Image (tube, rainbow, N blue to C red; front, side, top):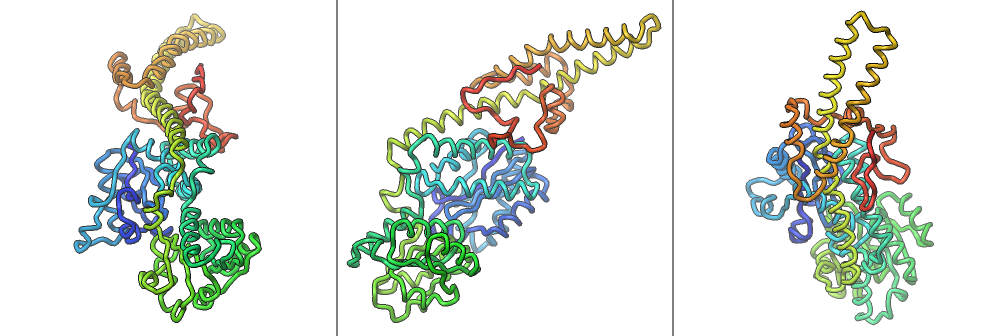
Length: 468
């Protein structure tokens, strides 16, 4: 099975391109369904944020999976011949196998974000995974990958200072906004009247950050007014009318826009006649703020592009070095487990072949009339014990050896040595595999008590279980 990550991000495309190729929740769901209907892709998770659109997928063949994903991305983006400059080849990237897994870990850690180390991506990754899982679009491979990526992301935030050192996109934007306010004569955010348009994840974070900074007043507007009222109540703010942005903008010095609207929500006519300084933070992709707004006198727009250009938007170098070291350790452990897992279907086929031989011999013994039922039962138990003991140590060792970097193809060696039928080595379903290897199958809840997958690769330093 081939693991792929296919997408675009702020690292591969300009902000304007990301805005043009943004994928909303409905389009992301349509993309996943279309990929699975096509047959080439077996599992799919679509991660769409203001910084990236990525498809995490498994496919029977690399080229077939890649072609299917790129074709569906072009369809969802609505690209035609006139949009040749926006096609995937001009701005996309592909990660395959171990590189795809490493990429997922880096994304979860926040190291692939526009603001290095930002914590929001971990929640966005979990939401994308949960959405795909609830739609039955995730199988064993992506389940294990995402469980491990989420665990690694949580570990990095728990064991390093990346949270303190790395401002979120919201924090970075508000820092730039405060500098602009100071240039206009404000002492800082505490002297400013602020409003947030949008009550989703980004809008909620902006509201919380502004409230903690002690702004002079704070309003929240959202298309769903009840959601705005709930958010405002939490942070002692005031709910405002989403349909009257002209009035809202006239009452504030700082306006943060963070909606999921496909079209700009703040336009130049909303600010007509304004002469007082105004700072607008546009945290949305596609943009919430029309281009004409940035050309208005006395208005400064802080957008994703400006955040991207900011020299200070990232975690401290020493903290990032610590995170990189921890990440390298986790990636190495995951790849070791993947290499060991690659031999598992062959080991299962070997055990199944041995079981077939035992069953045939026991059937021959059963046809003899000079054995009592008790004697036949004892012979069966003895033969099974002998086979289990003979196979146990070699099959445990072959998994350990296969996990080492640069290890030879132990799966092929087993197939050749024991003349295993290639069809018998086809990857079985999880439950069949557990039975074949005599492993306790995963419980009804696929997640363990610690939130990790029971059969997922182990964290570094964890001992390998001795399988009976």
